[in-house]
Length: 586
Image (cartoon, rainbow, N blue to C red; front, side, top):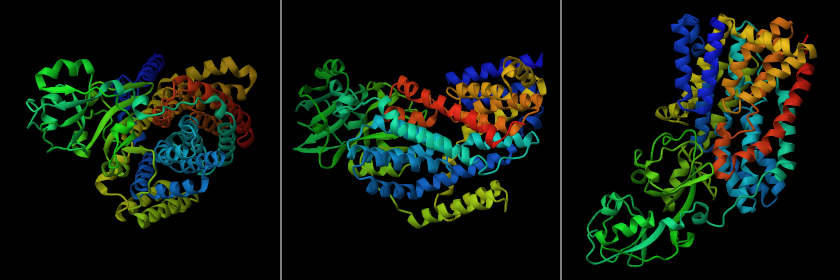
């Protein structure tokens, strides 16, 4: 009876993970509480995953990666790539896919994608290569790079932690490097020579057209008898009526309104709102609508510019609105529109809760836009600039990370202690401030992995893993143990599309290990095949790296299906053919 209860709970959890009606970490913790209350898990079993050394490994990697971002060391690398590729499109793709995959072998792939997308956008625009041909391949390369080392993805670390808890030998740091490299090479070749024919060309000639804001932008003249005269811009009757004052023209000088700006007679205001709403308040406010067609040219001057800004996973704005965060007051820039998936949001954007991957069209002084480049929460697309204000500390941080990997990989000291030491020394060196390092740690992911690790124990305790494993064995054993392994790989490849990679792997792993024990085959072969298959979240744009490029590349859902499905099938076949060679089943 307990087995069916746990299986039912798992199905409910998967549905909630996929629909995201509730935060995934809240769902995971809730499942854990239910398992303890029902007696399927003891409190000690429930929290074993949280006290494991793989949690230390993941948190340390997040801190060191954050230091790379703070010091600008990866910006320097991007600047060298900008100089190298010049106008050669093939060379551009080879360099960026190669460097993305290489970095992702040792860093979180989502962070790598967020760091690379800025210089990649700048170069692609310089060589007139559509972003839609560039950004999805970069996201895919970041996921494939993680298949090369033990710390390449959180999934690898979590799978290794789970098999160690089951009393199996841990995976070596570079144990699956040969197979990972094969997957990377095949994937990059596909992205270079096949995906180019599958990906669309989606570019718009201007920001105003691309974000569909022309109909919402209007110039108004403040009459000498207007009630707006003397009112502060942000507190004016227009602002209270949800009219966004974008620009102020006074005595032939264009200005971006600031906190102290006061409306004066004969000012010309560029406002963003629904025209019907503006007509309604026209007489009441004492303004005249000028009605000229507004283009990019009218929105920019030698000092004021437009920019597309991407919300990254580390942004403090996630799940907050622009009003709640007081974005305009804090940064002195104006958000004109938000692009999310296939939709441009232009109405009451101040109240919209922001998400990872949202593209914000901003207008502001060039200096204020450039300040956003130094924030881990934003990626400014367009011209690429190197913000190398901690060069020596960045180099030191990189050296500490390399040394930690080397001494951890050859078992001089445990990998968790090596990486933890590197993260501590990184903070002590001043590469990253102590009060900022916690913003780089993905706490939601850590909670999810810790909870799902405990769920694996519940599968074992209740007999659910044996029950499911027996059914899968019964269906496929006639074709041999490799066919059973293939069934698990296909299952986890499907689950990893709506779920996080780590969650998909930890859901299937207990069942697969039970099947390996029943069939008396090499459990490492099954574990590694599942771990690698979980990284193939290439069919749907739900993986964080895909979410980041979704808006910037102006992609549609079917673009991922059309490009990612063939690649997923190819890589699954490679995994299934080569796993028995590197890790014989018997």
